Length: 166
Image (cartoon, rainbow, N blue to C red; front, side):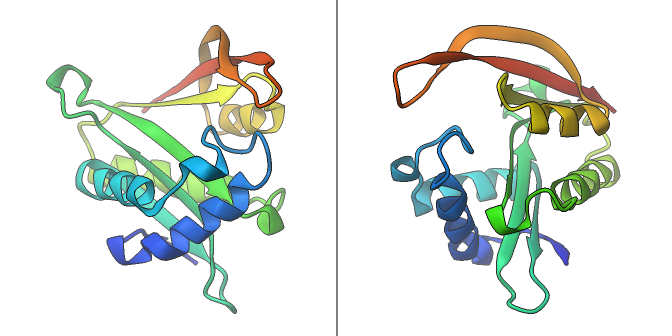
């Protein structure tokens, strides 16, 4: 059910992102900001400098979850996986899939990227479900960026910086 993501998966991943982005506040990017180039760039970066995993529904073969992260092309940050995004189809949320794919992601990093000792992510302060999931996985809140996120209604909210030391 969970597989390494490949460049051949970009159309299926794109479909997943568009489906999730249709729910306001679910992704940092708006639906209109997601295109194939954005997906291709992230997947290529993860394949070449990190990890990308997808989950497919066993009956429909639809991509129902995706996670990726990668190291920067800068030596001083070469031990850090960042640019992390995890996306779960609305039809499969709250069923443990996010936790399962994230656990596999961490396991894969430990096995394939032994120089990586840290994983970083950002999460909206209002997204308590995601924050709790990340904490369950061992992530710690390291900081809070005030009013970093601009919402469609013009309001602003804080972004939490979280990390996991491997």
